[in-house]
Image 1: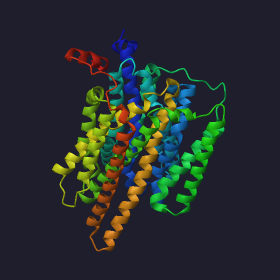
Image 2: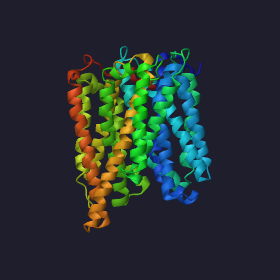
Image 3: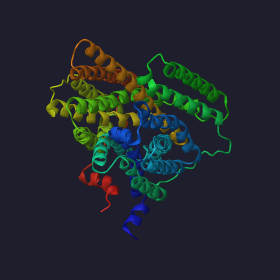
Image 4: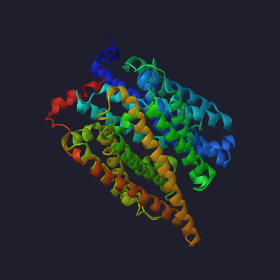
Length: 500
């Protein structure tokens, strides 16, 4: 028997290998959030995009990704999460190949629409797959470590995307930012078929709520369209107000449909699960602060400090390393010792401090020590925020609804981050324009805009911290007694990952 066969035959080893597989798929999705941004100027020149048309290289992906998460998560509960996951990875990989081969702007945007669907379908069930592979009642420490790994991949993918994007565009050409997904996708599909354990779906025997599915998908699609068009269209345009109102009306119709139909795509009882709705609210605020810090810090580094794309990716490495160190088990141990709520508050507090440092930057600010310390704190904040939020959200979710809950977790984060960035971007642009009108040079005016964005992001984090203290106050205590583990026990815990 080969070493790989032995590893796959061991249940404990199999689930850790399965975690690696789903994290590979999540890595593709995370990379895509920033790797494309680096190549936009080159893509515009090569495919002759207009400035307005170029935004659709990003928006096409965001619209379909955010609008399909909820439905895809529920489909995982109904037909099997492994099947849905593999289908999503295949679709994402094929669409990535189409993006890389595109020599026409229309083809690229169309492929990005499809890529967004594939990303949503695969990522919508990843959290549910981790939950079922690592039951909290059997091994809470393993569950926490698996969740920490997922959070690390999700957060670090952004800075890795800047590094890879800058290197590929400078050394080869922009097409390879999409081709890089092909080997990752192929490996994820082949190993996923062998290693991921499928759940028994609830089945489609009673029929699918096609009307409800259409309502929620179209509503989310229109809502995200209104959000991504906000910076260019303005608050009072038809694209913002008109489309936004239609989205809200469709969401209301969806809620009524779910309350009255016999076989809802999203049973409303899920929203009453303790921790899911409240953690989603806090997660949205946390995502706004984190994504804003990443977005505006990248602009600050490149436009104010004249960093190149590759240098910008290097600058974010302290954040990535911090999250990575926490994912090795430290956050899991802290949660076990002090409880998820206390660790969550620690994470939000670290993020708040980091945003405070960033809000006091200027044109003369050097990378060391202020920015370096801020990025370290952002990593500590992210690692100690989103992992406890996942634990709080999924603690009381039944296994049959894990896919839907996973979709809700992802949707809350994506929509909040997109809406928050639109608002903060608008506020930053207004501040910059006001400073230019007052006679300040462009560089100082731009920094003033970034400072406003950081302050507003910090306000979101502060609100999230207050809500955490109120909503999760009764759960400040650790979920279980701290474990006394010696070095030998630690080694045994991680032996499943040893492939030597």
